[in-house]
Length: 300
Image (cartoon, rainbow, N blue to C red; front, side):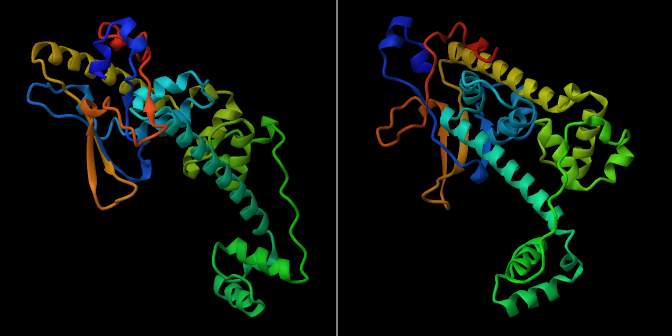
């Protein structure tokens, strides 16, 4: 990156260099820290453990900055130090997982109404074995399988939330009495994340009822702002150390390889701009308008 930024604007347009970042699976990630150097002073960049973990940053973005325009993905990719493709893939997977969880909650609540659900799990498993159907999985799935091979009727579909907030209780105590799937129905209708424990969902539904959804995820937004602020300060410190000491201070990645899970690999920023002909589609291009003088404004 430093090599690229040192080029003149014209040379940037002609240069084949791009900032490279090895793609990684966030679930296998072990650690990401700012590289330690005896000349690199302590600061907000190393005050909070795991502050710059891409998985943590993407979790915050998914909660409080959903439906971002495509051009914003470039800034997120730089902030996470991950290829734009990986950022998009991760956010898409989070959305798909949340939608799958929502549908599963609706189905579970529906089949809880069936008389068979009142029986113990051991009894349901025995009936499944006798009928020759799969007996593993959640309890409501056992009931569903037994009904599919028997003569019993299926329970009615759950009543959908219409969007009328007056049907929602006015207090958190009353909202807590609602089943989990009802809370998720309200949030799903109003395009509010449905992930989290019940207490979190209750507070979000209460915000819908009281018209204060704009106050949701204030802590997450504040945490994201702190990450951006720390990143800008750290970049400034890097530039200063590079000018004074003449030695690159880099951000260091430590994560497992997909092909060899038992090995660890450290890939610093210093090597991030080195071309790798074997890897395709994992580049994070540096905008041509970025230079050493204005790099601190990259997150604005």
